[in-house]
Length: 342
Image 1 (cartoon, rainbow, N blue to C red):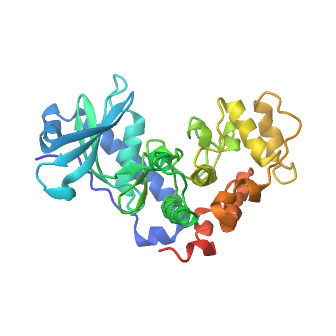
Image 2 (image 1 turned 90 degrees about the vertical axis):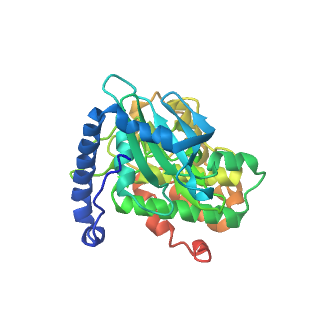
Image 3 (image 1 turned 30 degrees about the horizontal axis):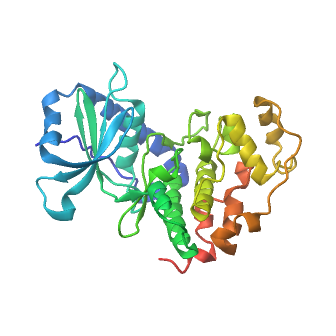
C-alpha cells in the first residue's frame, strides 16, 4: 500500500504566539512542501494504482476543464466513515500537475481546523493527481438555491464558522483569495468548511506584489479591480462580506459582467469613496476607463435589512471600500451577536 501523504511539520506553539516568526517560517515551510511535492512527479506510475483499487465511485459530484470530483466509498471501511470526496486533477501541460494543485496540497497539509475541509491523502500518477477529502453533503451555493429564505440565526451560525476559519487562516499568514459560495461546503450536521485552496497564498516579509488573477468577479474587492498589486487579508474579508449579503438576499449583490462593470456595481451600492478616507482611490481609479462623476450610496439599513440590525453593522465594516478600514476576522468574531452561538 502506498499513498503520497506528506509528514508536514505543524506550526509550533512558539510560532503561533509570535506573528513575526509565523511570517518568516510559514513561507519557508510552504516552499519546502512545494519542492517536496514537485519531486513526486517522477514517482513510478504503479504507485497511483492503489487509489483506483481502494475507492469505489458512488457518483460524480462535479466536473470541469481541469478535473472531476467524485463521491467514493473506501472499500477498506464500512458505513458512513468510509465516504469521501475524490478530486482527480489532470495535468494541464507537459510539465505535469498545475501549480494551483501543488499549492492546494501544500497548504492543506499545514492547515488543520474544523471549518477547513480536511485533506486525507494524496495519490500521484503520471496521468493524474488524486486528492481524497472528507465528504461534505453540499456547498453553500446549492444550499442557498434550495432555500426560499435563510433566517437571521442561521445566517449568524454560518458566518461565525466562516469567520473562525478565516481567523485561523489569516493568523497563519495565509490568504484564501477565492472565497465564493461554491467553495464553501456544508455537512448534514450544519458544519461549514472552507474548501478549494488552489489560489491560496502564504504572506511573507518583505511584502511584495501579488497576481491580480484572483477571486471570482462577483466577490472581488474594488482595490483588486483597480489594479492594486500589494494587498492583504482584507481581500478575503470583502469576499466574505459579499457572501454574507448574498446569504441574506438569496442572490449575489454585485453581479458585474466585466471588471469595469463590477466596479460600477460596487459603487452603485457603496457610493463613491471619499478621497480623504481613501486617498489611494484617485491614483488607482486611473487604471479604469473614466467612472461616472458620482454615485448615490444606498441606505444600508434598508437595503440589507435581511441580515438583521446587528448584521447590517458588521456587513458595513466588512464592505469598506478602503481595505485598510475593513474589520479583521478576529475583531468580527467579538461582535456580541456571535456570543450566543457555539
